[in-house]
Amino acid sequence: MDFVACLCKHDTLAQIPAGFGISVGTAHAYTTAVVRLRADRAPGLLKPLREHDPDHVLLDGTLR
Image 1 (cartoon, rainbow, N blue to C red):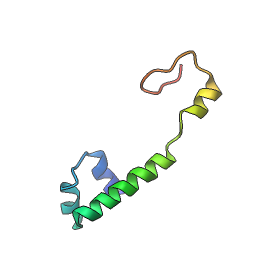
Image 2: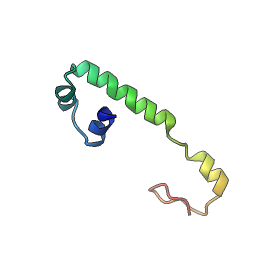
Image 3: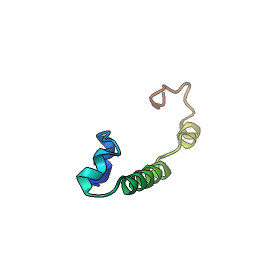
Image 4: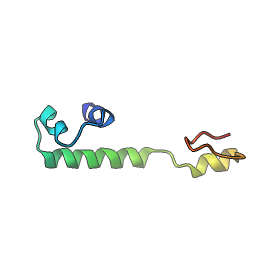
């Protein structure tokens, strides 16, 4: 969970390894894995659009 917190704080790939005592390559691999995992778990927009049939959709993703 600490690694995800670093990503949320927008730490660079040079800062992350220093905090965890890992190499830049390992930090890059962890970053890629975390981003892919979160993307796979993120809900798609198509299902809510079909369920709610909104008149319009705001750019922030809010259905109205």
